[in-house]
Length: 421
Image 1: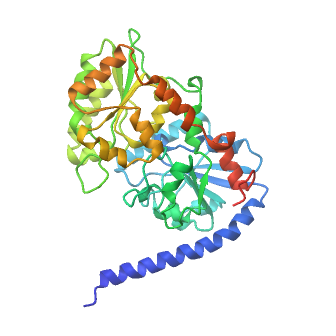
Image 2: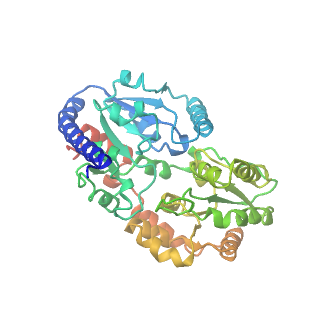
């Protein structure tokens, strides 16, 4: 029996495959053309300031005589309209404060930019308007640096890390080290577009505290500062990735914020997607009430945008976010990973060696008693894993080649300093 849906899917697969092969052939000539230019025009497409992790690269290119970096802003269509607009306005406010020039992107004007290279802040299809996507801009090259440090092991389930459609069109995918680059070896291109340069976000994480604004609100006395950063993958769908323990600990964390109000101030740092998921699960009224409680207590606040200053001025963190597993290790502070005991070994097996070593430096637990013990330890200034975290920092968290990640990426684009391909 003829099955039209299967036929259409088959035709679409053949078309997508043929288009990609044609583009990869075009890409080879485009590389030579771009490297021969006096000025290379690079467009950074951004919609959410909290996930814009190539800002340091943008700034480095502003200072480089071979580059003309352009900042382009676009609405995130994957969010609810109100949430998308809120994030967009926050982005524009941040850009204005930094005094960056920018253009607002939409399907009718992006081709007019005539960018040589695109950097998208996230690699997902349907994340922004189709007119802004790579599919509508195939006269350019694409490079991508992850918005978080890669800690997951290579697997079919984790193909979203480096084998989404955009990844396949990328000339360069930038990785932190040999361990993380292995994620790309099983991709469609078998790692041919991997470049071990470090990622710009590493350069940010290395930067001294003095370069960041302290976002913690003032208190009547000196208190320890703890971040709670829940992931968005609450178990309410068929999504196989379900890291979040938010539904298990949401009330407990409010309880401890009240209990320790004289000793500790807390920041609620939810993943940007969590509120949308909670709106579907709890309803908007309950979700808004919950967020409002964190926003209004004397010793609590919500931070939903840039979190780097938050990290730099904190004393500890409690989280269940895979990307933070390594990122927070740059502070060398105590950190707790919220996870049920029965899930620890399974979760650890999902991580690469880079991530496993960082995960082992966490306190693990999810019960009220375990969370309380960690908070009490921080309140008392105790830290029995400090030396191990310092050693991990020295052994694993430095970019390669004795240069910053941004320097390595610029050299890779230009084909200089052993980066000819």
